[in-house]
Length: 137
Image (cartoon, rainbow, N blue to C red; front, side, top):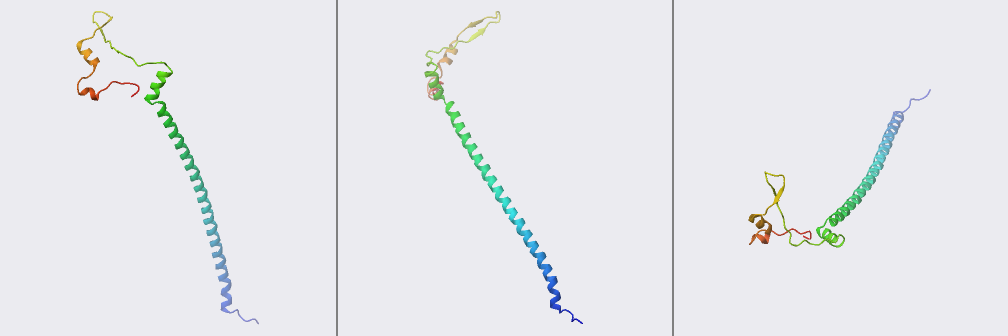
């Protein structure tokens, strides 16, 4: 007849099953943590790529805005008109106001004293603050 197994020998089998289950749990956790780390690195790489693209686009946009503002500068327009189009500054500019008479459909040119004063511009201290328009300004 065989002797019954000792108590400490019977428990070894149940402990080994718990250890195997815990080992599988630890391995599954490590694998999932590793996959999350790899996915995080992938997202970080994509974020760096998108950030560099945004910076390149911002730099290109800034260069285009600078070129646009230089093309629209009044001095460039003035120089282009003077050199390329052979335009010159007008002297002795006069404005004529045409008033239509109620009797006819034709217009008659008439300048009053007040219109002439408006053409000359302000006098005195106010003339320091109000200047004439020029494409060079």
